[in-house]
Image (tube, rainbow over the protein chains, first blue to last red):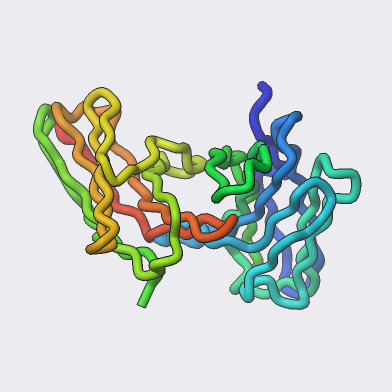
Length: 119
Length: 108
């Protein structure tokens, strides 16, 4: 399967614990995005990378959240001191940006998500 | 007010019927628009892009009205396999902004 993969697919943790999720994008894709989706809502943008550079972060990304993409390939999203309100599906997406100069038109392909439950 | 608004439904429609979804967006800086489909407990998948000229892909037709900031999706001859949540999406800069989704169930 050459699509976006995420690990783990499910995570149950206790409030106050730290968790880390991994995303492996489609191999030639230079952009990687993180979204969060809660029940009954659409995905909400958290942050995105172009290669290893983190270019934008949402206000939703509190100080407890950190994302990295150290080698411009896979990415990790860490949540420190988890709270019950962090329970959600964390979705990763990737795309190939060709840098044409105009508004980007590339399609974002989503991974299966990591479902987090904080008890 | 949400940046992308759509009726959450649910829409329960008999097989073979035509169903239409509407969506409005509030950020006039949004430059491109999409419909994504999301099956239960699965990831969103791109259904189609939406253009001002209107575009069709088989039984699906999408339309964008920039003046009204309004997006629509029409599904003709609906199939059982069309049952899903349909997400209206606006792209502003490099991020996608999703609506809450409209849940569609096709009834045999």
